[in-house]
Every structure is written in structure tokens, then in C-alpha cells.
Length: 386
Image 1 (cartoon, rainbow, N blue to C red):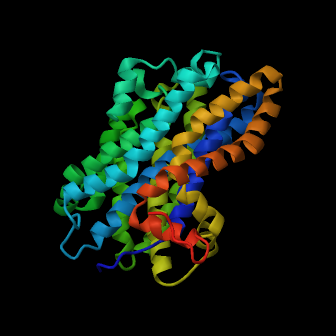
Image 2 (cartoon, rainbow, N blue to C red):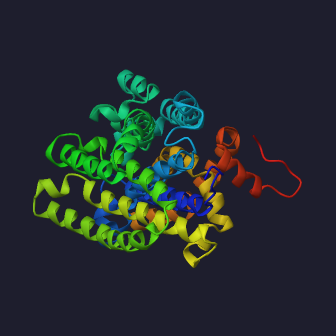
Image 3 (cartoon, rainbow, N blue to C red):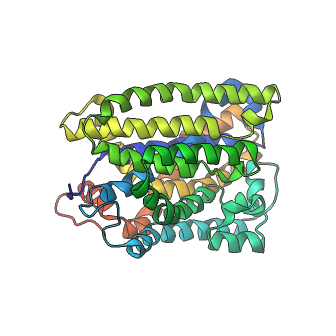
């Protein structure tokens, strides 16, 4: 099978994952540091789990990048070679990334509110150090705790994913050709779990390598007859396990059981593997011509549009929400009121701004699949930007 396969619902899922991260950061930035958790302890259990949207991004990335490899009639190899793969991923990822980095730096250096500590979550992004700036330029800032959260927090995961592209090309694909993918996923799950729980590398989220590999394996299983029958039940079971893992981890924090709570390994692995399994089921269903409600919703026009600029939204939202929170602080609003203002008034404005940034920068670097979506979003007779 060599024809390109298109699954439009993947863009909707990507959009929802980005939105979950935005809403999580909105909660995190509300008021001074820790105010939202103290004012809304019950709500915090749900909304502060939005970070797991990053794990979904990683699984989707492995899935989407593996689909053309899995359909390559010449075997598990990039159709145009490894160097072409690296060039195409660099062109897709780096220009919007550097634009968002520049935007954050401009705000920090030229907006006084953004460059001075004020006991808010934004304080973790400043000051900008030389080492931090250079590490961001080289996309290695996720490898050191001191650089990890500087300038624009969400950028650490972009660096992690970019590094995983090289791991895919140099390690994962060769392993997939030599041993069963299930073994690769299992070994990376155990190894990265040890690094996270038993070592001191949990801040780097090494288990994203496993989730990326799980996405790759899911792409292969999508093309294997009958794989959806088991995948559906495995996915649903893991989907139910994810909130349980999150609850156990947070309860362990209260009881000071460090090995359980100090890492997000457990809930992110459960959710990420659940998404990988459900992607197998969804792919089989879609290829059969069925369109269950969940896939119709994920393929709806609003979610497709959200997915189209989800990368820019992910890259640019944090400094904008941080700035909005700082501007609102002098008004003396209650914490809950400030949270509601940020969520229901500021976030929509931020999304509009990010869509403008998408039109300005990201749309010029879309891949082939995303260009198809962009073209469908254009008014009749008007060509999409390339």
C-alpha cells in the first residue's frame, strides 16, 4: 500500500490536545503563584491535568510520521532518505519555533511587567540567561533543569520532540526492522520508567520516546487486518486507567511517597498508550468507511481549524496569558473571578492572536497533509497559501 492515507480526525484531536494545555496554563498563571490551587482545590484536580495534552502530541507525531513509512513498498524506510526527512521536519518545526522564541524575548525585554519578578508563575521564565538563550537556540534546553523553563515554558517539549525525530531515524526505525515493535515499546517503557522513577531525569520526560514508538507501532497496526478488535478494548482500559493513575500519584504526594508522585510518568504513559491503541481502532473504522460520532466530531470544521493552527497556539499562548494575568493583577479581582476572566475572555483573544501568527508564519511551512486541510478551509476560488 503506497497511497497516502488521510485521517482528518487527527487534526481535531491535535487541536483539543493543544487547547487542554492552554487551559491548564491559564489555571496555572491565574493570580500569584499557587492562588488558583488554593482557591479552587477541587477544580484543580481536573484542569491541572491538562499537561497530558503534550503526551497526546507525541503519540500523534509518531503515528503521523510512521504512516508513510509503513506504506512504503520498499520497507520500513523513509521514502526519500533520512536526510530529506530531517530537512522536512526542520522546515516544519523550526521557523514557527524561532518566531515564538523571538516573540517571548521581545515581551520580556521591552515590556517592564514581563521582565520583573512579581510572584506569579511567569517568574519561572525570567531572567533570561546567556546559557538559557543559547540552549534554546540550539534546542537542547530540555536537557538541563536550569534552562528547562526559561523564556517560554512550552518550548521544552518542542526541543524534546525534535530530538526524538533523530532517535526515530537512527534508533527506532532500525529496531522496528530487526525486532517486533511490541518489544521496542515494552523495553523503552521499562527503561524510560527507570530513568524517571529511579533516576533524576524525570524533568526531561524520557518516556516520550516510548510514547513516540507506541505511535509508530499504532501506525503499523492500523494497516494490519484485525488489529482493531484488541486495540479498542486495550485503549478503553488504558483510558480508564489514566485518571486512576493520576489520582494515585496525587494521593501519594499527600502521603509523601516520592516514587509515585515525583513524576508524571504513570498518567502520561496510561493516556498516551490509550491514545495509541484507540488510533488503531479509529484507523480501521475509518478505512472501512464507517464514521462513528466521535470521529465525526473530531473531523468537524471548528476542530479542523483549531488543529490547523494548534502548533502556533501551543508555541505562543504562554507569554500572552502570562502578560494578561500581570495586567489584571492591579485590578484586585478575586482569584476565581480572575480565572474566569482569563479563561472566557483572554483565552479566546489569545486564540485569535495565535491564528494571526499562524497566517503570518506557520502556514508557509505546512506539510503536504496540512496543506490539504488548509485548502479545504479556503473560500471557493481562493487559493491556499503555500
